[in-house]
Amino acid sequence: GESVGLHLPTLSVQEGDNSIINCAYSNSASDYFIWYKQESGKGPQFIIDIRSNMDKRQGQRVTVLLNKTVKHLSLQIAATQPGDSAVYFCAESGAGKSTFGDGTTLTVKP
Amino acid sequence: GAVVSQHPSWVICKSGTSVKIECRSLDFQATTMFWYRQFPKQSLMLMATSNEGSKATYEQGVEKDKFLINHASLTLSTLTVTSAHPEDSSFYICSASFPTRGRGLFFGSGTQLSVL
Image (cartoon, rainbow over all chains, first blue to last red; front, side, top):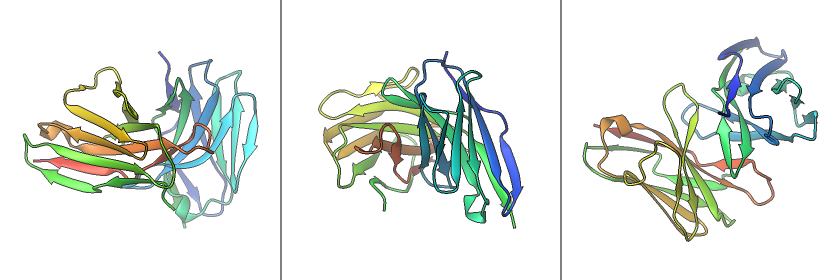
């Protein structure tokens, strides 16, 4: 069946460094992907999305890369800040609903 | 500011009682809302899709008689956990698609349910 999964459950980075969070998906028919950030005790927050007809999309300090050949998605966070510490989920949207991956916990060390 | 409001933020109840959780879209109409469940250190699991004016669509394995969903208006969906038991203790989160945000979802703040 379809699934969206992440490579690593935790990531620790130094403040100011760049962070890269990876995600793999298995449904080759997926045409829309989203990254969410979830802080402890809160609902997920939309970060950035990308359609399958794109390879890259940039936002404020964030970039999402999509490699359809290997069904891989990544989120890059530039100049990581303490406020970026959270759990990050990738999600695949299709058939009117979103399927979430397992999540990567990002910890930013001061 | 928040575009999806969810209440209550947390609730503690006795086993066997029912709990209602409300999800409201603020300043926009949401014909479809989604209810997720999340256990500690796990991902979000879609429970059901709430459709305004019609029956909810439940995911496989989710008991529709236990998790009652009502979407009576374009801005309100409710989830009622009936005859709650300790294993129903979880973080419940609702979401809706914002009209100009494509398929990206806006989420409520979540409800932490603890059943004693």
